[in-house]
Image (cartoon, rainbow, N blue to C red; front, side, top):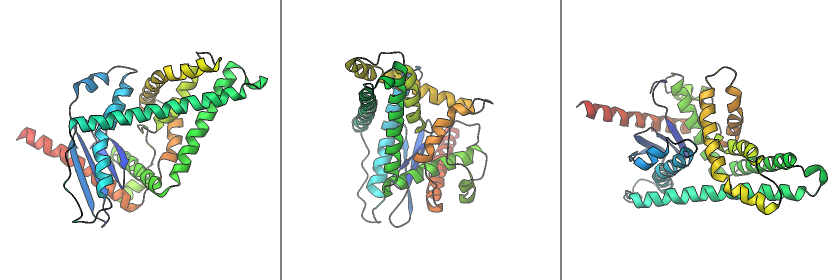
Length: 308
């Protein structure tokens, strides 16, 4: 892929990486015996999602649904096969539309439930501090609420990053970013070149998390903090708006990276990636390169078939 072509996206999966473009998604995982296995899947065309992704404020939700749906089969593939030895495999079942739609719905609902808890708990804790006169003002309460959210988010990401499974997942996340950065900089895809580039990337979805805290602070300034029931209700009611606006901010920061003087808007998202990515080892980079080259092979085969 050349730097001026359609951007490639991706995600870390269990012991591997998935890369995708608008037509295909390909995963590569490191098996228990040290071999690398790939899984390729053509992305289905869903007119409703395609239309929804063009509507400002709503397109973030549609992108979330699409991501959950497309990533489900690849995550299941990785979870089912990475720790098996050759000969232990069972035939892979092709997921039905209903099955993957169900997985997407569960993923989206889990995301919203998590965000709801993340919105309500800080608001409740901040309200308790409001009994102190110096901490009871409208702006002060919103600042405290945002600081509590930020503390919870960073603490959660740090603690889970200490577990072996999540640490390796974050290393593969770093490998995914490094491969994309290497390609976008026009460098040859070698392990040494990939090692040298940054593990941070402007299009990373994890940056979205920090933007929900920042955007939420400004949105919640527009609604009352008292009484507490109204405060909690407004947090739930405005959650879709905060998510939609946060997605738009993420898109803008990706564009701002090329505008002199505006790159600093993306800094909070990049800083968060110091927690959600880790430096990968050579074997993990090898898997990420394998996945990317497999995706390129899918595109080459598609073009050859079209010409043939």
